[in-house]
Image (tube, rainbow, N blue to C red):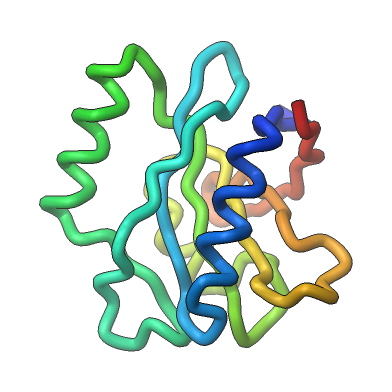
Length: 135
């Protein structure tokens, strides 16, 4: 997988989510089918240090996964923002990439960011940046 397809409205929605609390990491899941991400499922950040980390509470994650399945979609991506650093995977992001088949989207909430949405494949401790095609 060298490129991921992201619906235009979903790209706008996740950027809005990141910019709604620019001092905290936002997070959520991305679903779709046939390799096109067509739905964002924003989550509450349950981490203690929301300025530097994110976590989706297990109960919320379970409900979101059920919602994805019931809609006939697949989990295709996970997103979060980096309000205080570049939007590339941190060592913690790489360590906690528990879904190797999902694309990891990292957002910058800053209006002047050159690439506010970046996507990565993270597998076996290695990261590869993916091209994003907005559809």
